[in-house]
Length: 212
Image (cartoon, rainbow, N blue to C red):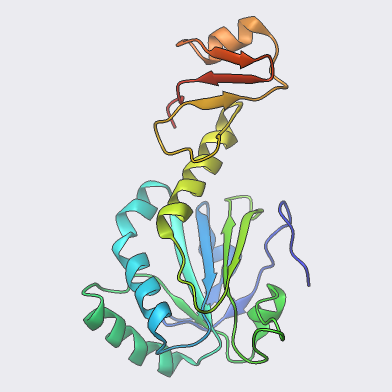
């Protein structure tokens, strides 16, 4: 199954390190970062889950829930969590789906045979409160994710969801943003962007970031 941006994230019921997860019900009115791992007790994944745990407050202030997945069973996850907590000096505070039957992995196309016929790839899905997929990223097993980039994308998605702006290359929270080209009414522009804007070209208008 190929999932594209704007698709509704497939619902599922699956066991996890924190009990049964009914995905859409569990997500509620939150944004979700769903991210997969090749296997338990692997070095890169251990650092990633530790980093996710340390970002709990950053995710919370963005109304985001984190949900990890691999094809190992619950018993393995629980033992691995103890290792993560110890080696990464944190406490895992989010569930890890135990997808031993590959039900969720197949729904989200997480097993790529040319990479591995058994392990899930290192994918990320950012899903909004309407259950729509807003971002997908897939990394090779050897490369750990950049969680600063994941937070940056969430900031951009949430900003552009509620304001008629887009974020330019290398944008960080607080930088100028771009007024979308479809917005041409000067009265509306003045109302939306009281700090004004700078027109580099008619189609490239920069304005201070509105408040989230």
